[in-house]
Image 1 (spheres, rainbow, N blue to C red):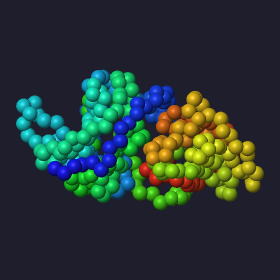
Image 2: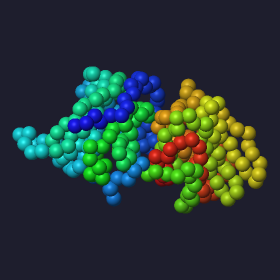
Image 3: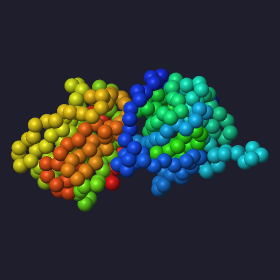
Image 4: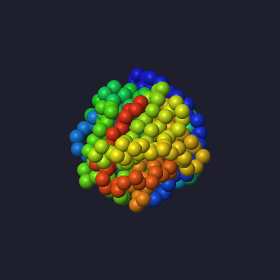
Length: 311
């Protein structure tokens, strides 16, 4: 088979951060592997992304496969043939590497790898974004490879995860979004609701803005400046702008980086918004009016949206 990589990048060891483990982030529950799930609905569309999060429970490693069917493990006598693995991602803890390959009609391609240091107890974040000709593969929010398809991505029907891990979540997100992004919020953004935004920052981004609207008022505005490396929060009620707030929790003043993927979660608590970046609490912002009046959302900036949804 022809070479499957256009580009491979090494990954530095991720800094240890304390993610929030509660019902807001969803990291308060885990589930076991092997995990096998069929894709719901229609075939994969360009721009959709697989996101797998969890933590490592042993020293062997784990795999994440995108397959053409549910036959993902050999019988006890090792008979039969497995369905195609359009992408086979294998994390080997002992070697400190992530291996990438594909197996079509029982024939493996040329395996390649990037360095990545994990150990037992570490959390992991692996993402695969699908395009017509290739996958973009992100490990710990960094692009590690463009993996060219052997066969059309429409052949993918299942996701399979197994090994020394427990999972927080496995999901398919989004599509190719137009920017700026504007949407009404069905039922409004009342207390207890969450906004999830998954995206990839451009190579040389300037800013990112997330605004909530209640009529002409803006009860919450978040501006992330990649140039100044700060995140400001403010509001504008009845034409009066509040003073911007720039305080933050923890030690990381600006956790966003160019060309990196990221998640932002905004939760409406009783008296304030809680803002999480990559499931780590970043800041809070007191309500300037009842959250239930918020009816519209706008996202602008130098990013590629992967997914946007409200629960």
